[in-house]
Amino acid sequence: MLPFKIHILGCGSATPTLHHFPSSQIVEIRGKLFMIDCAEGTQLQLRKLRVPFTKIQAIFISHIHGDHCFGLIGMISTFGLLGRTAPLHVYAPKALEKMLEMQIQMFCNDLGYEVVFHAVDTKENKVIYDDRSLTVETVPLCHRVPCAGYIFREKPTLPHIRRDMIDFYQIPLSQINNIKAGADWTTPEGTVIENSRLVTPAEPPRSYAYCSDTAYLPNLHEMLKGVTTLYHESTYAEDMIDNAVKYCHSTARQAAMVAKAAGVSRLLLGHYSSRYTNEEILLNEAREIFSNAFLTNELQVIDC
Image (cartoon, rainbow, N blue to C red; front, side):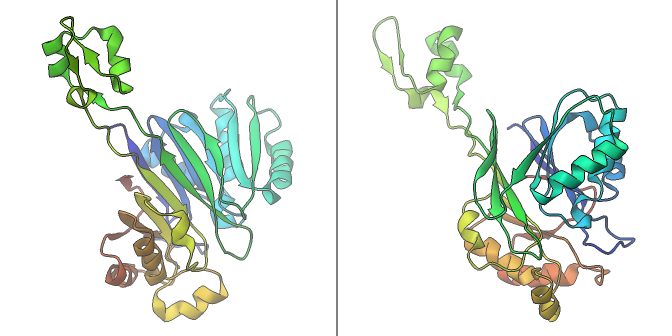
């Protein structure tokens, strides 16, 4: 199975602490690297994880709060210093475009590559990126500023042809792709070998949803149905639910409610408030609702 991994660069919230970096992640899928959010310290975390800067194809920004985008212009500058020539695609709410243009003109006016900005409509659930191996779609969230989550969906792969069947029936290499695509095989004697005997099923496609920052949305699960792994912000425990409502964030219990309703395989918690020096309280609350919940931490690499 080809890699589909999440590299956690930062899982804290806005106030700096000695425990966590603010939000940033790398999604690695079939040899491609994508960044979600780009807070301060992101470049240092990339170095620690030995993630190659030059292989990052696109950056997806969820919203225009500093703990999710203050590191972006520094990253863009470093790409230039490293000799990048391939375009960098930045997906973000429209409000960032003019500000980013001004920063590039001031600090990076001789980059050597193109920064291509794609305005994200934070009110729509739609596919904004599509290639041969995956799609990325937006998920409208509810925060104090326009905010979108992202779902990375792996496209289905073809079945695996059985080597023993190739040898037994002496199937020529020229026919393997046809069989993978569903064709039967007819022997020289005219016997038809059904496709189901020749192949083993492909692994089911995986998916990853990133939902940070957002107030609790009772209907959010409808867009997340069947997602393999869900990252949902869990800024507070239930004892701080008034703060969650006031600042448009979620509790760990609410994140677990979304995961359970969506039927995801695994829930990752993150975006912890700086008031917590031990996030076990968040994990315990989430697991009361959804047992397959886990805390994220910096420098973790998680298989989807």
